[in-house]
Image (cartoon, rainbow, N blue to C red):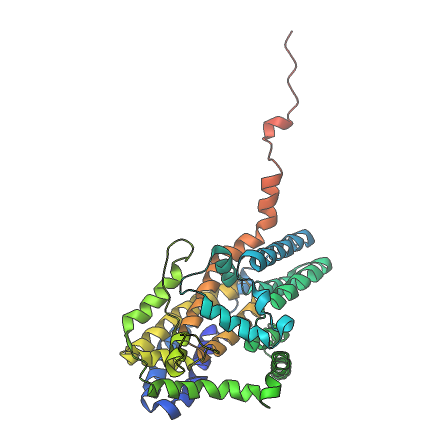
Length: 389
């Protein structure tokens, strides 16, 4: 499965969360699906050699380097839990059914602007646990234990009320870089089991017998409600503007982000105090219908996804981050359940992580050594010359 290009995961997500929408949105949804997948397919079909990663072997990571990497992960966790996103207050395993309520309350109280630096860093290094798991294949036995412990702690911290993240994380870990169908089937079954375990923690099993089916069907029901509620429209360039805003750090320049799912939830479920008890999702077709002309919006969404997907996929292969590749691919299948803007955020974060953060983390032990240990010039090691008589 790790041999599948990221673009095909993107296409699978668009089709899976698009085709059933034809039943509620009409035949025009077929044109939007085709317009979105066409540029992704065109950019993905020109495959580059898979051996490129083997030509540039990732370096061996010493036990000391593994400890430094794990220490950075621990430092980030402490800073983010204290000053940043503070995800522990939404943790599924700590707060059970109240985790979803806390997250919705946070959405209602927060503004539409960008987050702080630590919150932005958290988005960028969201796949760091999987990169450390990949690094365990190139380190000592001590390094394996250190990196696995740090990765598990980070995954626990990042697991909020969303069960799907936990499901995809478990599946990506069990798959690794294998393409054996027996392993894929086993990983899929374990991931489904993880989803139901997370559902039991959130109390969903008491409300419904099949939360997995409900989570698949209700986005299309919400899409039908949105299309019949006359929630308004926006021009296609507003969709592009929302994409471009992602490159502007909110802690440097003030910006206003349009919370599509929240606003559409208020449209179909209006309230007197302008708050919602739950945030609905409408599949990626919801945004496509909202931004007109929809056919152009769908094509632009596919073009952006194809370009970002190819850039990220090539870098993942070069760095031999196969667990990261599988996880990002699975998330690209999952995120169109909500909207393409979320998928843009994931891929942009991976570009920053792969081109800037991960290389610096791999060189962190050497940089620290150069910083802490002074480099004396060679002349200092020479014996002092004798004084002439």
